[in-house]
Image 1 (cartoon, rainbow, N blue to C red):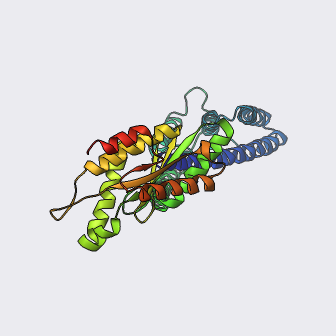
Image 2 (image 1 turned 180 degrees about the vertical axis):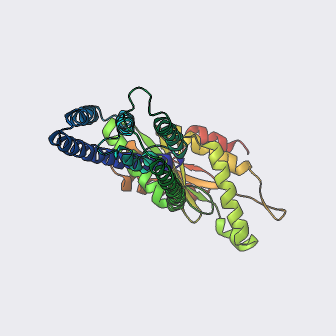
Image 3 (image 1 turned 45 degrees about the vertical axis):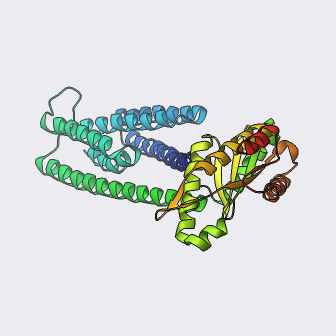
Length: 365
């Protein structure tokens, strides 16, 4: 079940990544439209160099979109867009754009950074951008810097950008915290929906899902599997003689012993009341009988105690392989018939019987 929870979390992360990719594609389209429009305005205003450079910046963004459409590589898409955005902003703050309004485009950077990267990475990139802006503002005579800004603009620019950055940081931190809480809650709810609360084993619903999955695997690839339907012998007497708390302890202890006997690939479930079921993938009937016999022997030799009182506990089990059934319903019916046969045969035994089992049962006498 842990694997299923991990898969569920992976699917949720994949869905979020797809949403981010769609957002990046939309942002890229908007960037192309803005670059083309503002570049055209600059061109018609006589600032042909600035217009041409803006158009040139649209080329790598367009190529990045084509690359993502062909490869589906989200990391390259994200890194490419952030790199081109950083280059464009560096150009705008160094040249001033039109009427020295280039630095104003920096306000689009904080929300984009925190959404696309982690809080630490976004903060580090923002600090680097602050440093670049500070160098441009303080050393306007450096090569490539053609814009000049007055002190009032510099102060207001840094103050407003800092406010926006802090605000975006807090919002993103809150969003991530809320998301993590929701994911944790969803995982706990999903686990509870699949698990028997008392024993910690899979519940009947989860076992039916696993059976259907395994049956589909059998139909598709021919992988055989078997099931073991188990009933604790005279369990009602435990409740009647020792109380329901003692009965709960027996069920919990049985689950612990079962986990120690079955393989990691096997699934143990509480089928209902004192009935349990084992799903054994890639297991023949004889192999399932051998495992069921090991479990029967282990349970019979385990001390079940409650408040200092030892309670004798044994089990009866019916085993069936999918090779002897044509459907899940038929498989369950045959396992139930075999369980009834084990009870009728004297309990504390496995059905169908094989020679090795008969010897084991006869050895005490």
